[in-house]
Length: 277
Image (cartoon, rainbow, N blue to C red; front, side, top):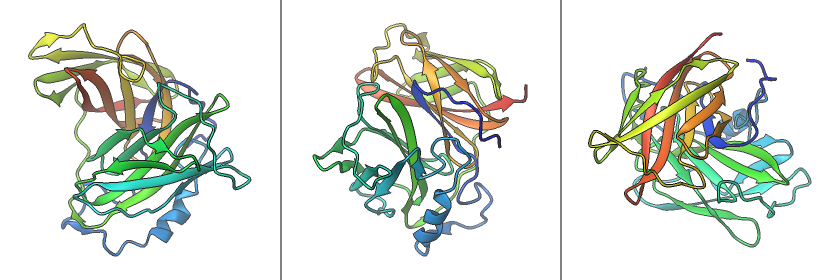
């Protein structure tokens, strides 16, 4: 992969997943995580090829979780800190999209997805309640800005238990967002070039034109490429559900669009393909 691929430095978050910790959709029997040795994965997660989110340390910032194991089926407090290259805990974060920290949690087969906003204590410890119902191997991304510069670091999180890895859903242009909401996506993804994606939201068949802002924009987009959890950045139009992104390589991507309507944040999920130029 070209480590020099330029990614846009600001905008909404798009996550790209490239190689999983387990094979998706290939296990004949459910897989158990009870015997997973986190240290093996911690060694691997310090590696990266220049794309954000592949490493736990990037540009002098390190993601330090209090734990890399959480129980499934009940809320648990997840805590972490961001440490600089001098070993000091960072406490001075810029506000981006109305928040000082965006936390993305995704199961490696795309079956679980969380976009959360932890609260920071005076000592720089971030805390949030995570309720992960399903066992599996997850990737956690801390997305933040310090002194005007965007940073993304990632770490692994394990939820012990028996689980069935899910196959990547087939590409589709329409997604069900629940409660009568459907979302269409339009646009062609070309690897290595800026590509535009436009989303249309319908409720009970009627196109919505009254979507309020969510975190300072009409919507937020997270995209996961089938693979190793590299984290991309995209630009969003402030007035429309239109996004520009540069997907680094051809392949299948899982998109998660979040928007607010009817007093709730809703998520629509898509699989799309980026083709060669």
